[in-house]
Every structure is written in C-alpha cells, then in structure tokens.
Length: 161
Image (spheres, rainbow, N blue to C red):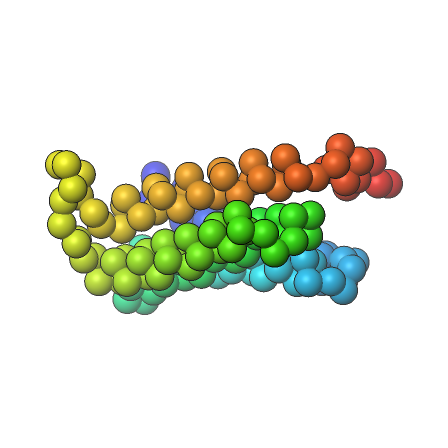
C-alpha cells in the first residue's frame, strides 16, 4: 500500500508540474528568468517520472541520480538568475556560481556510481554529503535573492490579479 501511494504521489507530481509548466509557457513572459523557471519545472517533472521508472525497475539506477542532479541544477540556476538580476556580476555572485557548478559536478560524479571519496573527521564524503551541501547552498541563494530584492519586487506576483 505504501509503495502504491508513493508511486501515485510521484505521478501526481509529474502531472502537476507539467500542467504548471504549460501555463508558464503559454502565459509567461519571454525572458531568461521565465525560461529558467520553465526548465526547473520540467526537470522536476522529469525527476519524478524517473524516480518511478527506477523504482519499478524500468530504468537503470543511475538515471534517477542524473535527473536529480539536473533538477537541482535547474532550481539553483533560477536562484542564481534571480540573484544576478539585482546584484549583477559581483564577486559573491561569481563565487556562488562556481560553488554551485563544483557541487553539482561532484553530485553527478559521486551519485551516478555510488562512490565515496573518503572520510574527513569521521564524516563520509559521498553523494549524501554533497546533496546536503547543495541544500545549504540553495538556502544561501534564496537568502541572497530575498536580501537583494525590494519589498515591491518580492511580492509583485502576490499582488497581481
């Protein structure tokens, strides 16, 4: 029963993200940020579908890890795009972009083969640690977007009819 709920939940996520992506494609503006948002939505739908395919045994195990990395890349690129819009090409933007690229590369390399580099102070350096670092980086990017966006810009979408 739990398995079927998990499968149906991921399939519902696929449908929801594809519908939302279609709405963004049809009604959204034709800007780089809208394209990044659309890509993030579609990559999330692809990840949910790949999770189901791997779980049911229709696809190899590495596929979910690769698509998961692509999904993370899509959302982080959107956050970087939002940050760049307000901060420009600053040192912090370049450092966060480089950190994002390095961590995504490590996630792809370690996750597709289930490799472990070693241990530092008793902590295993593997894909789980890299995913945790990516989540922390995502929080840092969101914080930078919020910090560098005016109140009017931040809530502009909520005020539209």
